Amino acid sequence: MQKKFESILMPVATKLGNNVVLRSLRDGFLIITPLIIVTSIFLLLANFPIPGWSNFWTGILGKGWESWFTAVSNSVFSFTGILSCTAIGYAYGKNRGLQAIHSAIVALISFLILTPTTVTVGKTAVSAVQLQYVGPNGIFLGIFIAIFSVEIFRFAVRRNWTIKMPDGVPPAVSQSFDALIPSALVILAFFLIRIIFTLSPFETAYNFIYTLLQAPLKHVGNSLPSVLLYNFLASLLWCFGINGPSITNSVWSPIFFVLTQDNLHAFQNNLPLPHIYTQPFIDIFTTYGGGGSTLSLLIVMFAICKSKRIRELGKLAILPGIFGINEPLIFGLPVVLNPIIAIPFISVPVLNTLISGLVMTWGWVPRPNGVLLPWTTPPIISGWLASGSWTGSVLQIFELLLGILIYYPFVKMLDKQYLGDEQAAAEAELTIDFDEM
Image (cartoon, rainbow, N blue to C red):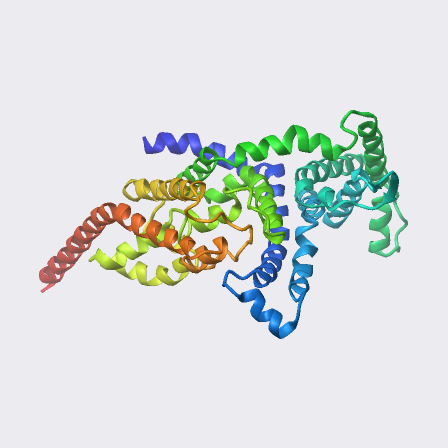
């Protein structure tokens, strides 16, 4: 059965992992993730979940001190659409063997060409760009623009539609002229696309993508069944030695990213949080200690195991595990191709997802505020910061304890097996020593 599953899943996982478009989406979002994490900290400091926090600092710094911090967070959060487009264009061009910086620039310019640049104030049209077009709601449009613009650029480059400069010209100048005709082709294409959408009932490419794709995908992704499937597949792939989230994120990451930005925007403006199933929900309320929620497994290893192999591994893995790094455990225990541990490894994150989704739906725990905490933030602290309430920490403690109960009989079984192997090895060594005497 195990070999059959492996023969089915491995080719699919490999194909998804090697798909240049999905890989570029993942790499592009990873480029801007550090910016989001750092600026999220500024937003969190402006809205720290402690009663009287704002009043305390107002008494010291004066009114409006929050604007110093929100100016930093807005520099990224209000422009995630255009930043995503540029980063994905960079990653996609690099993965396609092009000059990455040229790919990023043509993606950026293409995005700006399709962005409406007038706002009607009363009956007067004013030159301006609304943040809704370049912010979170522009992410899906940015994805399509990045891929399409780079493909047009690549089409021209592969056919050598370039201006070749004579030998001796500095490389920077030569590369600039190499990109001239391909860039012109991209600009011409998006110039025509803008005209086509202007004449259509949608009026803008933004309206077209948001109406037909982004809104439906957000609805489908923002559901408990979708997130349950995400964590099931991520955990299952880990059991075969495949980095599960690196595969599943290729599909779900754009959806989670948009949902997270929606919550972040609402949090900034003191509005009700619209979504539950955001990236912080996945990172903070479903897996503790990394994939499989292995912090519960580590606690069981320390509490009951007598096998030297397991206890020594636990000493090495506990500190990284607290901060969400569990590769030593996955490959050292191992979890990979271990049918005993596979059952709780898959079921615990799925059960955590179900419980967290339900308690947030019922309002027992506040929804994640959209702040992207560093993924190494330990449980209990992360639950409080992500939800803005102590109930987030209580939920994490409960799920950690539940994970311990689920892992217990399986770890006990594995410990018994390893202990038997160690005793057999020790007896064999004694027999050899006795024979030598």
